[in-house]
Amino acid sequence: MRIVQCLSKEEAIEAVATLIHDKLMGHPNSVIGLATGRTMEPVYAKLSELVEKNNTELGKSFYFMLDEYMGLPDGHGSSFKHYIRTHVAKPLKLKESQIAFPPVHSAEGAQAYETSLKECGGVDLQLLGIGRNGHVGFNEPGSKKNSRTRIVKLTEETIFANREQFVDLLIPNEAMSMGIGTILESKSLLMLATGKSKADVVKYLLNHHDDPSCPATFLKSHPHFTLVLDPEAASKINLKI
Ligand code: GLP
Image (cartoon, rainbow, N blue to C red; front, top):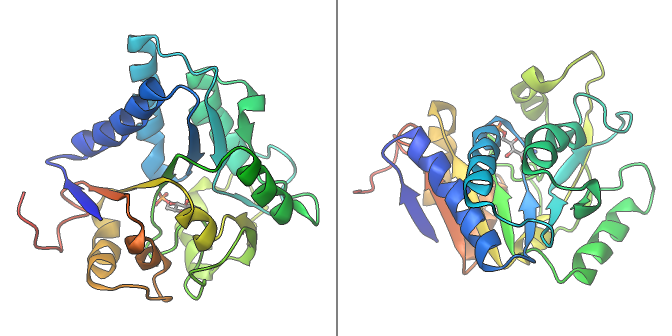
């Protein structure tokens, strides 16, 4: 596991956006795994700045979403599809056919998603945030290390933490998420944690291994796992810069 401790939140965001951009420049046909959440919004904004500045060609790249809420009408304002359209597809000028969305409206969706992942050769770079309770994607505490894409029940804590992102009273309590086993098959993992609210979970992550109460700890066995931290998220750990 490689830890990149940054001197400011802006530096952490720029570091993550630059790593994604470098990947896309070096390998234009890369498959990128997309995460949602407030943490990623400025990353996507920075990435689109880099793409514009360097005139980067994204036509051959492909994107898989990490997760999606169940039970919302297609493209609903609280859905991750809406988030990705707003923060990724539009600013990066991607065609919607370049993005795979979890097929949450079909019973066999989870299996079909795993099949499409395999068919496109797997994810080259998976972008990840972390929930305050240690969830990744929507792999809530109790998830297994070998879990695959599936429908999961959301904890009250996660629903509460994400409350600002719900645009109306349609509050989902289930989601479809790539499993930990699915995520571990990505060629590299890039996690970003920013802000005070992530300081405790970052400390826990660094001090525990393969702990189902904090699913993010399962990712530490990945040979190419980079964790980027801003000063607030790193405020409870003792690493020298
Ligand atoms: C959501 C997403 C995760 C994200 C996490 C943290 O529930 N499913 O992929 O990493 O919450 O979100 P935020 O960045 O808003 O703290």
